[in-house]
Every structure is written in C-alpha cells, then in structure tokens.
Length: 56
Image (cartoon, rainbow, N blue to C red; front, top):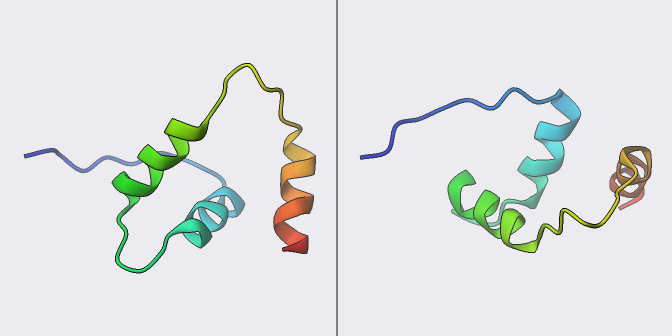
C-alpha cells in the first residue's frame, strides 16, 4: 500500500491544482494526468500562468 506524502507548494499553486480536480478524482490521478501532458522543453513564464488562472 502506498504511503501518503506531502509536497510543499505555495497556497496559490495549491488552489490552481485543486481547481483542476473533477468529481471524485484523487490527487494521484490528477497529478498523473498533469505529468503526462508536461513537456519539459517548453518554457513557461510563471507570471503568465498566474494571470491566466486569475482571468479564467
């Protein structure tokens, strides 16, 4: 059985991740989906990400 762990993040990041959960989806499933879509070769401006999340 897997053990529970914590990932320290800013409150704003927690809210961004939390807002992506759907229905009874757990964080393991959500984070696996996010990792599957992640491309480490694409540069992301964190300030732009925050602006987009605020306007949505």
